[in-house]
Length: 113
Image (cartoon, rainbow, N blue to C red; front, side, top):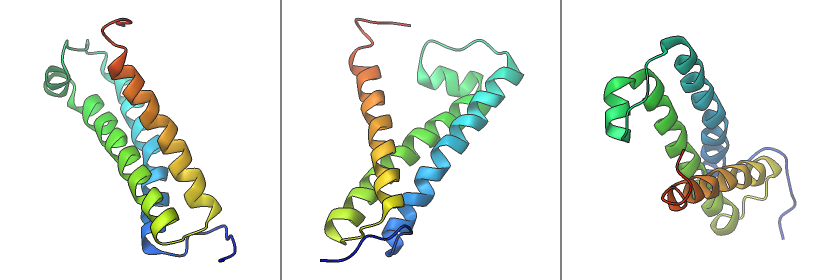
């Protein structure tokens, strides 16, 4: 049994950590851009990308990074035995974020914003 470390041992664990760090950065960029632009949002995601690409694209990239960090973290942790605290934290936080996104889309017909 391998011992636990703080930093990732495998390249896949490093990718999971890097993508996990990119998530809040991209979401902050999109949020900061939203306060600067003051353009009203559209009704659909495609309409929002066309109306406010500086807001929508970093947010969508952050969501994709969260999903990619979750998948690479799970593979690194279970298949490659990368027992790292930072990899565990990255895929746990991104997993919670992905669960939030699933709940947001699944419950949107009953709880619209």
